[in-house]
Length: 119
Image (tube, rainbow, N blue to C red):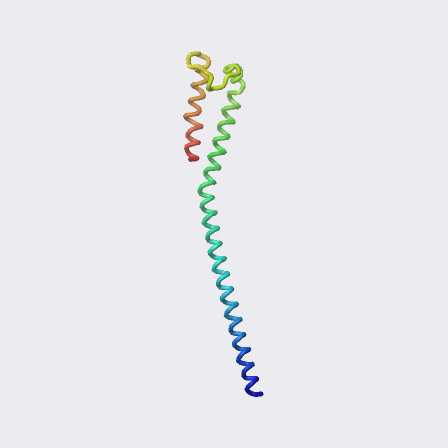
């Protein structure tokens, strides 16, 4: 019996040590995986913030610029365009030329630079 209890003791000790080692290994692997995942998420968040933060701000500026332009000229637009679209206007007609020049100036000095900033 003395040998049997020693054998059980050795097996118990071995199993206890093995389970402790497996638990430590599992905890280590899981914490390493968690650390790497957190680092990847942090990197992705940084990329999104650096790209989409300025992009969103430029989009909002572009939208506000268009709304301001539209509010300023919408009352005149009906009289000036008489149902025509910008593409249908002629530089030959003096009234339409004013509308076209104003539109082209706004597009080239406000709208397009903001669009280029987004690219």
